[in-house]
Every structure is written in structure tokens, then in C-alpha cells.
Length: 195
Image (cartoon, rainbow, N blue to C red; front, side, top):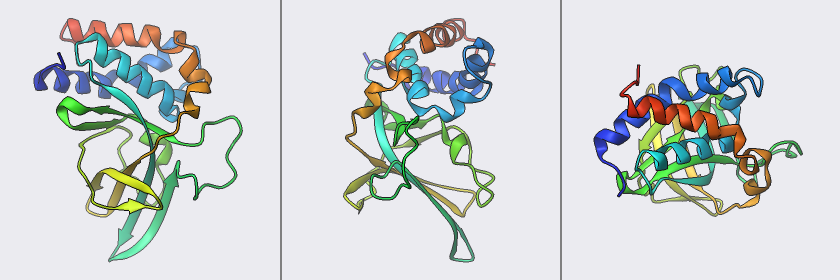
């Protein structure tokens, strides 16, 4: 069973309203840390969706490209996670980006776009859910899987990656970092508390 569209909508509402505040209230990491921890959040969302019956939800390593234009001219561009276009990686961070995919609903969920906010795109939301679609192009060997336009001038494109090195990070290995948040998200879902 992969869950109904109504179940997914309720889950997305709970994720949007409660995911990061719950991590902040845990006190195990600095306030706001989850907004920059794509592995931790993607695994938490996957586990939560599995708990409520959306059992085909997966985590997906991606590269992301964000581009802002003003009057047809590029005013800013940011790439995250493309192996060819990153400065020397921070040895304390995984070199990539992680999202969730829900195949039964053809949906991508990105809960950590906060870390990509820049002055060029102040209206970039921190959490996005968007329909997967074949963007019919590749970017330096990576296939586009989803793209959205925000505020008529910000283009965000996610590209599929096959990276597995994320599995070695503390956020992936230490399930205790997410266990209580998954439980609280599930409780909110089971009681109908998305407010």
C-alpha cells in the first residue's frame, strides 16, 4: 500500500509545519541545524511516510541548480552537489543534496532548501514539493528529474545522482537523531493535528 493522495497531502502539511520546529525543540543540535541537514531530514521524512503507510517513499541523492533572472539576464546561479562544479568540499559535510521521492504520487519533496537562500532569490521557500517530470535534458551527465519556477524568475532544477557516500555520515548512521521526530510527526498525523 502506498497511501492515498489525501494521506500524502496531510503528511505534507505536517512536514511543512512541524519538521524543523520539532528538531529545534529536541535540543540535540543547534536551533536551525535541521534546515541545513538534507540527509537527516530526508531520512526522517522517509521514515515518517513509511510509518503512515506511504511505503514507497525513498531518499534520493541529487544535484540542484538554482538560477535567478531579471529582465532575461541571469542575476545569480547556485549549484549544490554536482561533482564537477563544487569548490573544494568541506570535509565535515557530505558533498551533495538529498530529497525524497514518492513514486506512487510522482512527487519530489525537498525539506532543506533553506540552505540555498541567497539575496538573488529571497522568496525561495525552505520546503518544496513538486511533481516529478522528465525535464528532457541532462546537465554534465546528470538527468533532470524535476523543475519548478518560483516567483516568475527563480528556476530550481533537481538532477538525479547515484551517490552512496551519504550512508557514511552521522546523520545516516545514527537513527536516534531522527527517531523521536518521526514518532512525533506520526502522532500528529494519527490525531489529525496538522495545525
